[in-house]
Length: 84
Image (cartoon, rainbow, N blue to C red; front, side, top):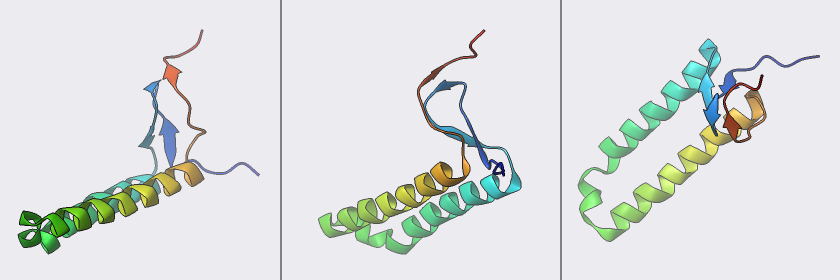
């Protein structure tokens, strides 16, 4: 059984872009997570501990988005355009 892809591989470079509503929802969720994170610790970003916390929580969000892209996207590899 072939899985339905939520993300297609980019034509140039490495990475994905969303192609289904599920992929767009995952991308939107990540964007809202980042906005919520900034709003939540905005005042704490003036301290070193706040910056470290922000970077740690951002890394968790990136890892989660990458896990979804790996699970529901094409196999990642460096691409140099369409092969003829």
